[in-house]
Image (cartoon, rainbow, N blue to C red; front, side):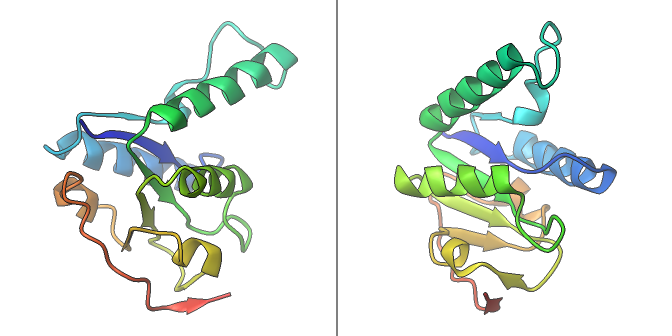
Length: 146
């Protein structure tokens, strides 16, 4: 069973558009059984930023990271760097030896810690709709690293 955790920033209209397109691609993919997108898991009954909200978000995201068989991470730059929450989720996935699919539509450079930990690099969200998550075909990032 392929259970995906979708790591992505969703703080701007551009980022929300991108993560929504990733969600749609995963929904179309016949090799994906289910996915979790933190963007869709914000509790209505808790005040944003409150201690109960923070506790819920952290524990819920970790629970879904633990349950995931694959992590898909959008790493388009957030003020010249990968979003810190997304970077945390990537590191967590690597530490627990989960396959890591990196999506980068913008930019041509990548932090070497991410480039060396990925299973597959894609530069088009559309590729996720047909990628075989059961086979997890690998590739190597060949662009510039920092």
